Length: 273
Ligand code: NAI
Image 1 (cartoon, helix red, strand yellow):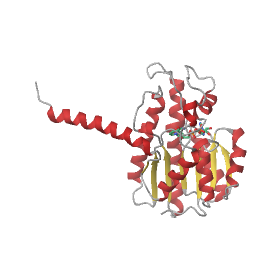
Image 2 (cartoon, rainbow, N blue to C red; image 1 turned 30 degrees about the horizontal axis):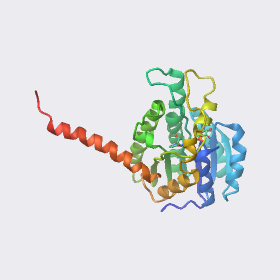
Image 3 (tube, helix red, strand yellow; image 1 turned 60 degrees about the vertical axis):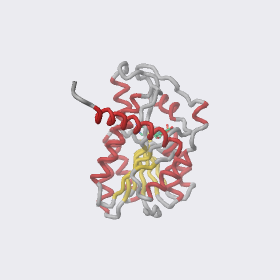
Image 4 (cartoon, rainbow, N blue to C red; image 1 turned 90 degrees about the horizontal axis):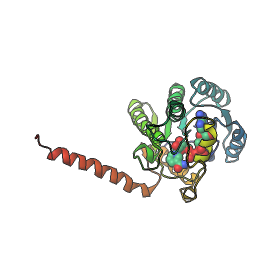
């Protein structure tokens, strides 16, 4: 069981939502936190809220899709705390509406840039720092049910990047076996955040359409960020590769596997014409 007292955690996308809740929960267990987020206006309030939970915190304005910005954030983190033990790759954006065969490259570049390259830049920058001190650590990826299932929610671009995060994280777990650095993939279902609204604001003038730009009534009934954070941190400390936060999502995985098994049944029954 990994202990967080006196450890240093970097949390991306920590200005709001799940990232902020994770940062607060990690701080309440004694960790110091570097909050990396592209939103400058939210940074100071978020860092203050995290400090109020017990641990020290700095806010670093960082666009994770920019490799140089991530390296600068690492320097700021080392300057403040000297070491890094935990990386939480949580920053993410979403767009709902455009069809995969319609959407322009600028939207693809933005979402792949944040959701996938953001995680890649952070792994490349922070894993060597975690390895350097030999005290071990952990990488927590904020995946999603959308990293295992494609639903009819018009979020195909987002789903594509979350499937990539599943592959990235599972592969990383193999690569880091035996190094003292654990790897976890949280796979939440719906969480009560302003995800659609904050993504719509960050998207600015990119082309195409974006439906559901604001939180819906549906969102209000979703799991709280505090609950997701508590479950994710418990899973991380226990060394789980997969952290299933939403018990009611089990049936969705079962349905997917039922469909896959049906494909194998067809393979078994296949005969050449
Ligand atoms: P949120 O919008 O509150 O948090 C996302 C954060 O990422 C924001 O603070 C935003 O400013 C930041 N961000 C966006 N672009 C960035 C960039 N280029 N560089 C650095 N930071 C950037 O939304 P939420 O829901 O807390 O999302 C957090 C993560 O949880 C995302 O990866 C999302 O895919 C994942 N997730 C959310 C679910 C939900 O139902 N809300 C369900 C499953 C996963």
